[in-house]
Length: 231
Image (cartoon, rainbow, N blue to C red; front, side, top):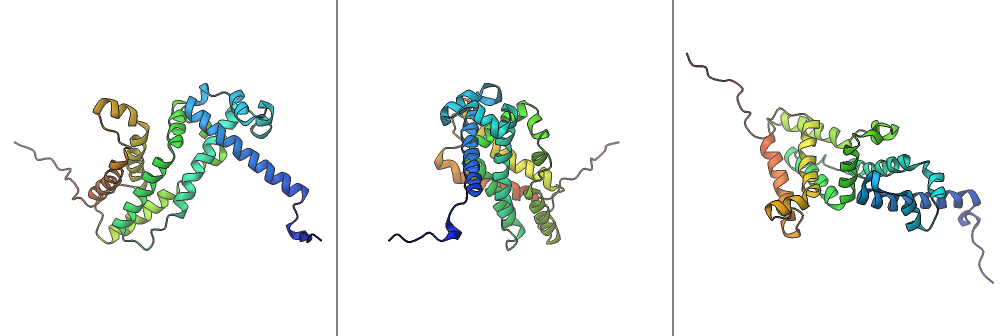
């Protein structure tokens, strides 16, 4: 006689439908992310996304409303991934120099592991961030990395290690710029200069270089703004 499944483990109708809906939504976002990253917002077609999923455009619109809302949802998920990684960043036990290097490495690793994110951000910049601006969750989504950087900078200045006059947003921009450029411009850079910035043997070189540059700037002697005058 077959053992009965405990009532607590038996799936209920509403719970199962909720799980199915969440899975379907995630699958749509997976395919849509690939299409938007590959073809851009204008070039991607909801018909093609539906065809790849073996479903209908109507089903996609049931979950996301329209193409604009689908692209916005793709952006929301992409940004949420890196924000969640930033929230998990544990640097409280590190000295300021090691902490800022660890944060730079996190950004480097994330951008390398998520080239679609780089393409989506590039596409959204072409559209002047109109989809991000229309998203309540994205427009109000602050980066945990900014708060972490601010605390590290404060600790480094208190210890007398960091001397540069830079705020957390500017430092975040410097770190992100290097990591973003390495992925977004790898093809043009390779063609123009004969060097693949993403080539595996060079990975640790650039990962270390990023941390070295940031730390060298933060610990450097500030340049004097005084200018000698002659009679």
